[in-house]
Length: 101
Image (cartoon, rainbow, N blue to C red):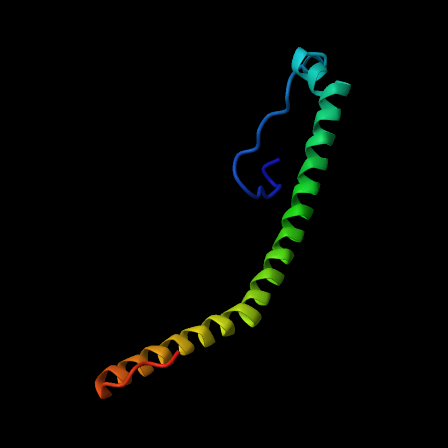
């Protein structure tokens, strides 16, 4: 044993009474059919949630890019039109003529 090189830290001793732990209450509950069905349902819910978030992300990307391509230029053009109207109104008031609409 002294001739064998040991790697790592301290080795733990083997468990005693491993047969006794398998027949315990926690072991029986954790191996029951209800627990396995619950684990399966949780796993299925996680998969569905992941797919839903992925598709929601795609929909958000499509909506965002559509907004940038279609709506932002419209807002910019409406702002330019409003500035032109304000400029025309200001010039008309300086020159003393009636503003045309």
